[in-house]
Image 1 (tube, one colour):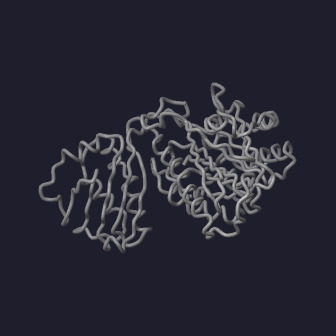
Image 2 (cartoon, rainbow, N blue to C red; image 1 turned 60 degrees about the vertical axis):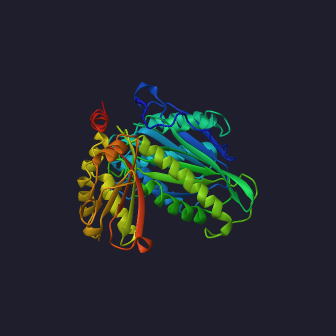
Length: 418
């Protein structure tokens, strides 16, 4: 991994063991210097899965495989390789995904359609499939229970590419008074503007939940987390988020629909885990030195608010101003206007660090730049914009997260294949 991001957490968190989840990782030779590049999660029979994926029209064969396999709702294993995305590799790429699933299924005595496959790395290069299929039997034989102290961290490291630190999150929730566990790992640093970057995330729970319920929960949680972050506005060909329920934990009230009140705490805790992972991805944005929260209110709808918020978050001019600590608020005005959504420019109210900058279509009378500049010199920046299209209590709102754009981003991506 590269020099650790200045926004990184102090340490990898302790992740709760998930009954029915066993993990292993190794270096099979995809990456240079024999860095870890292959991860397998073996799941208890009867486990269920949900997934959300990239909306890119050049999605890779691993994404297409998982979309098809998802229809069955069952899962026995997840196989992830890093260092090669296996994207735009023609029919051979699709055959390589099938071969990965077939080998894993053979070792486990499962169906290939119960194996989920992901890949991340360089686009357009043929996957060294022989290295993967040769490594899989031994790797599956080495899986260890998720209670082992270092197992989650090693799994997170194995799925990383330009990440500077492994990403994990964990919590407990209650379903009908019974405690269940949730743990997840993720990777992502650049090509992050998910529309479900490169972004992969895998969240596991020992709760017993049917696949349609998982799908509903995941779709809603992803919209508030992974679909609300951006590093560079580029959507990957490989974005994948999977939510797996092993059903191997404490017996709880049977759940048949996502609207069951017994799931209230589980929904909240799932949101927490996924948002934690999403924030870690932003804090590891390529070259990032600042974590930026953008709130938009006063919009015509929630959709419009999100479009405006993302316009601000994705603007290179806004992001470079954040990098420099330059209180050039005119760039935020520009980004709001180019979004193409309804606003009232005379009521546009911009705040940075809680300090009001604009009102009545101009800079606020008595506005002083120094306090805003001081806030922008910090590692955490807060921006709020009321676009004035509707009264706040009746308006659309959105919150998104991004990072600044520095010379480091250019260096990392210019040197990516070297």
